[in-house]
Length: 210
Ligand code: SF4
Image (cartoon, rainbow, N blue to C red):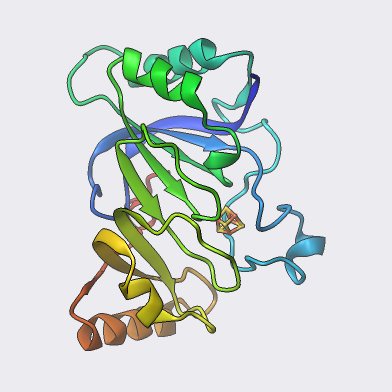
C-alpha cells in the first residue's frame, strides 16, 4: 500500500504522558472528521482542529510506496542509535492508513510505536502506546488504551461516560484557540473537580518545538 504523509520530523513529544520523549513524528494526511478545508469546517464533526494534514507537501512528507520505505524514512529521521527508538503516528487520523505491514516494519527497525487517534476507528493491536483524543459528536469505538486526552472545553462531551472507559491515564488539555486563557482556566477547574484527570499542556508550543 502507498502511504500519504503530510510531514515527518524528529522532535520531543510535547504533550501527554510521554511529554519530553525524543520521537519521530509521522503526520499522516487525511482525517475522517474534517476534510481540512476551511470552507468545510463549520459543517465538520470536528471543528477546532489546528493541524494542517492536507496533502503530502510538508517537510519530510510525501508518498511512500510501501511500509519498508516509510519505516526506512522514520529510521533515517531518528539517525544513529538503537536505544529508545520511538515513533509517534499522528495526523489527521492515522488509523486510516496504519496497517500490519507498517507496524511490523517499524517494530523490525526497533521502534516503540505510539499513536494519537480520534478513536473512531479501532486502533491496530500491535501499537505500543494508544492515545485517544475523543471529539464531541463522534462515535468513539476505541475505548481502551494508555491515555485518553480530552481537549477542553468541548460542549456536548459526556465526561462521566468517558470516565467509564478503560484507559490507564485520563488527561485534560486546554484547547488552543482565541480563548486560550479561558480554556486554561476551564481545564484547571476541571482537573481540580475531577481528580481522576491530570492537566497536560502543549509544551512544544511553549518551547518553540514542532
Ligand atoms: S480529529 Fe484530529 S486531525 Fe481530525 S479534524 Fe479533529 S483535531 Fe484535526
